[in-house]
Image 1 (cartoon, rainbow over the protein chains, first blue to last red):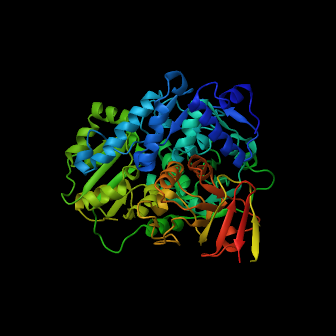
Image 2: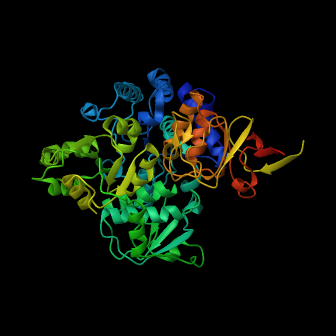
Image 3: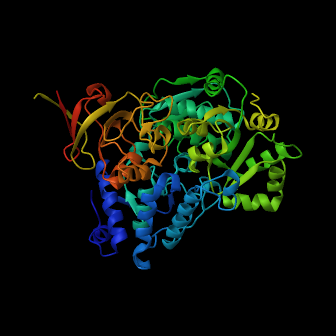
Length: 415
Length: 136
């Protein structure tokens, strides 16, 4: 992999040990994917909840943070994915103090590096949205797929160590979705039904994700009749990325690189895979359960936008969650502040729900939290969460936001 | 002793040897594993309940989220990790995690790697050349 003068200087240690180690790491990854060189980035986004970090990586971050300021400060604007705990409310859901201590240490280390603690997986709905053609180093699969597909920016999945390395060096290896040739369509889906709810959009993303055979496969979706909302594309992309490890899709007539089929395929498009209403119904059935027992209802993965919070507040206003059920809602700190100011938080919490900020359910030591609260049967409107959470010992049920709220009120699964 | 040699793309990490654990299924450290017990914990996974410690894990593709990049380092540090990963196709997260953890990994083989190695076979993984040696 070709390194320019600045990069060679970094690798020689002239810009400090953290940047030397960061570039060494990037060189290994770049060589693995045959990257020809490095590309400068505009922003970095780091996924680093403490459930993923564990003690070992927290100590690693603290080592980096102990270097002199000139050596350790990030080179580009750098923000964070959700954390593992809402420090104002963790006791209510019985999160262990040991995890909270790790969270505090992680935050201190990131702040010493000059990282902005945005704690969100919906930064594209909140802060300096990426611009078409911009090279980025973004973590969180949902953030990557939205930035690549809906906004036309360019990023690979950058796991925490690589996003941190990119933040320190201000660049990343040029491979995968930074290259024009990797952004061409490979598989065509013909949609013969129009998703109605955000959950339908998530289900559609999950169905397509299951069909993906590698990170480098690019699905093209044809047949969407009306431009979806940002929240619809958020649920669609998050599920597609989660089920498929897929960082880019093209939606004909909707996403910027796909005005028509000939713009995304070289030559004749492949034979399409048809998706009908029954496919979406079957997807819901995959996350059905034999009885109506219910422990916890979760709105998260991705965090809720202000519009979703408004919808939820409207559904919960004047009602009460059954005392046997926990209802958890996760959003970004910036949207929580807005929800507080607009009176949405009051409507949500008065009904008995918990509105958590800066976290996402599966990133909160979900296994231990489930044991501590005796949660097993979990209902959600997030297709992405159903994909993740069974590995943590939960039985997921998929339903629309309306069905989830009705279930929380009734104290049992209502479909 | 007879050997079978399989070629993949040049990989990451040191040369290691161990017993293979194979399935025609995908891989994510966050979605699929109980990393405290060292077993596959997702009920739908073909290796559900299997212990992966010190095994050469042979699977199809990496799937799911970005957490595996941190998790591999944490697993290696606690000595609760597989000894190597062989995948048909790794995504960047697995490559980044392997680089961060110095965990051996190779992908992009001549054929489907999950059909070329059987569970229990002794395997040597040589990332610097992209070579896998199976003892017969």
